[in-house]
Image 1 (tube, rainbow, N blue to C red):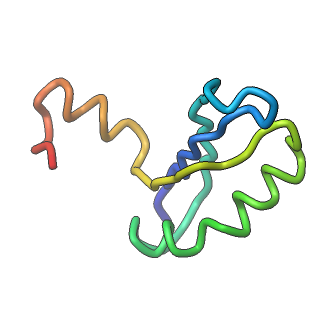
Image 2: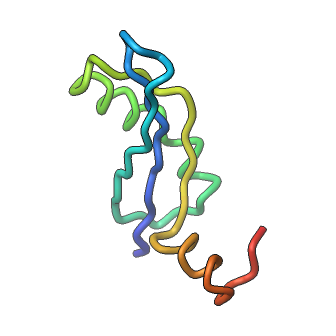
Length: 77
């Protein structure tokens, strides 16, 4: 099993210009594309627990993949 991060960009309901990224990590046996397609129930649960926020977009990544790309350890893209 691999660990995948679901990264949700959320904005405050009362201040839509105030946005943040939230990282949800979980073990999975599926691809990043499958993660993105399976994300809506996890996002809905998070929003249900945090009603002052609304989700505007999301993506899936393997943990630390952006850090490695920034250091040139893996090809970006």
